[in-house]
Image (tube, rainbow, N blue to C red):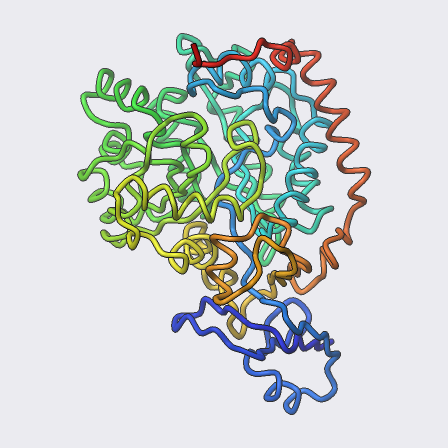
Length: 463
């Protein structure tokens, strides 16, 4: 079946970064068959179903390269804390109580949030495993909502001294055997949802764990993602224990490679950037989370100048506090302008690249998604600029990055299927998803005792 999406402004993100006025896209099944003007496509494919998107903008589906979907249930409980306290007082105790039904409810809600903000691919970093089958609960949510993505089977094997609750500690052999089982089950050719590996952070795993992760990734050809230099404390820990920074240590033991996606990288130094470029390591930039936890400002402009692949992400909703990728677009551009006092250092076009084609490159899918090109997957977002905050529109990319609030995505295609139409999900009931997440959040925070954090006294620095 062929469909022509007609009369839109098509922001292709192709190598020439073409923007086609009165543009059209012909879809056949799950692939893009042709891209051009509406007039061209109408004459070439007269038999195709035509969907009129006059006054709409179509972009490639955005790619969120780092989140923790279970944290959807924890919004607002970790406010105004640095990362170590945030984890010790709220996230860790809550993660200990996770059950499959919690992860399923959280992931469905997070996937819907993401789709509603124009995301068609997610990388979920699932590091909490106090009970079996939590990763499969997340995968089920991906499948039901229609989301494309990678669920990275994470693990923590040490760290009690640093405040990791004992129920979150696994042995590396148990974690990797579970990961192998999931990879062999789900990583079929062309599968919309696949599984990767995610050793949590340098102080939560041992050298042997990283070496075994590298061996399994080499054997099965899967993505590895890991938190890197998120806070100054992590870097100081690595310096004290290994005599070098965390990224430098991972390089010294042969862990790094072009299949590694490093999340955050806030405190990376020039030597780290040289290593990233040499090894082909990719970066996931999380601007909202880094500001929320006061972790600092990642050297993203320097990475871009060095030719390192940098993608964009939201991070978990316990440190953001949502899955609104459109917010990340604006913050991701503005914080570097302000920090460097240079309005040109990151442009609207560059941040959209990071959210689309660079995001695809970061997870090894640049030949399948990330731009509107013939032969690629039909993962598309139709934007409707019909609100006062965006109008009047002089430039479609500027409007998305600097003016949009997050409700501009009107229709979303994933694998050629409409998963959201007229801002309403087509794959799941929004009412059911929201109610299930609310119930799961109440139950989880009651069991964990973190519900009390909602009732903390108001804190102010004012005299």
